[in-house]
Image (tube, rainbow, N blue to C red; front, side):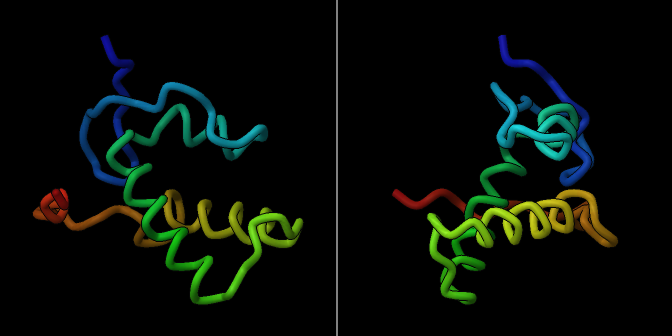
Length: 92
């Protein structure tokens, strides 16, 4: 049975992540309070950031930007999605 969390991003109880995504305090906060569904939204958002800023995944500065952007995405001002938000249908 999946571990349930009260997702800070989506505002409802949903299955949580199976492991901490980052080896730091932010990773623990995400593990404790972000759902799998919100994490999927983040992955899409981060792909956009990588492309827009032309970041190289192996560059140490990319990790710093990743943490800053994740903090803002999940816990920053206006981070929670509107109550009537419905994710787009899955492709394929």
